[in-house]
Image 1 (cartoon, rainbow, N blue to C red):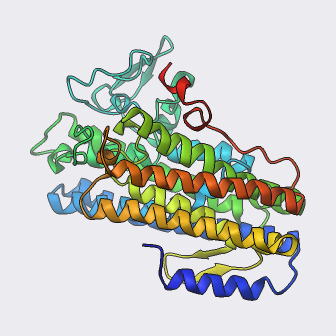
Image 2 (cartoon, helix red, strand yellow):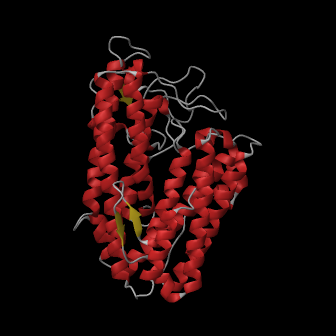
Image 3 (cartoon, rainbow, N blue to C red):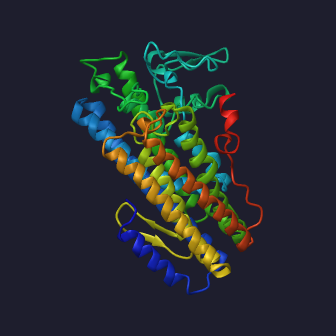
Length: 416
């Protein structure tokens, strides 16, 4: 649950900081510092994942596979908190799809269940890069004899089809867990460690599967190194938000509003609930969706409060959006903070239920009581977005376009 010492500490900290006037320049500088810290943490956890992936490939076993899975899960914690820097910042938006694109047609990458069928609208949905050293892409034959980061980059969203996700966290997730064929029953993917074994190979092409996993992990690291550079001194992401502090504040509010509403409440939560479809889970292979939702929500709160707790326990904090709003409308600032606290409690309730044995895909099942937990979190995200929009007005942030979602704004269109 979110009712803990961190909440009390951060409220006390905010009360102290709000007693002093802050400038937009101070706010966007701290915003950029938090972004840098989040991407640095994402990079360090990706490097830990790389070490465990190398150990798995060198000696496939239940233990080395489980270690790689745990490191993948750990890597998601800081990364999900960085998603609050999307949507308003073009540098992040242009970059993000390389590392966190979803959902994916997993048959592009590897074998899938015989009755899964692929995607009739995507000719690459059963291409199976791991099983095929030659690929026909747009009438041209691609040499995939050796699976490298460059090859994966060339195949990512090939032919402009977004479901052709060849890189990033979710490609790695699929390789570590395999398909989750449990539907809305409890259960994650069940890929065996022998899928990576040269001497006891299951699934075929174990050497190429290992190649793909290593290449995808190497590429994730290089992509995160790019993100760290973007937010370092003179990096493009930092420059985008600090050159014009007013525009930087607009970017920050756009980011948290759009993630809160259209992306998380809509595409990641309400859509799956409407369709009762576990394929709409964000971390569907690992059944980690309860955590990805939670840390997305926390990332939004981090940006508003100007405070991020790093993976080593240290804290990056300073002038915040809360401070700016507080100076203009104290009641609104506190109401929005209260909304975000309620959102974190609701997301924490989902997380608690999942950790107690009711997985998120079960909650998406028709008539499942866990659906009420999901809907409550959706409602809280929508509430906080409305106050984010009010905050935009009181701080004079200009034109903030919060992204929408048919699942919230026009649900009938989802079924058409």
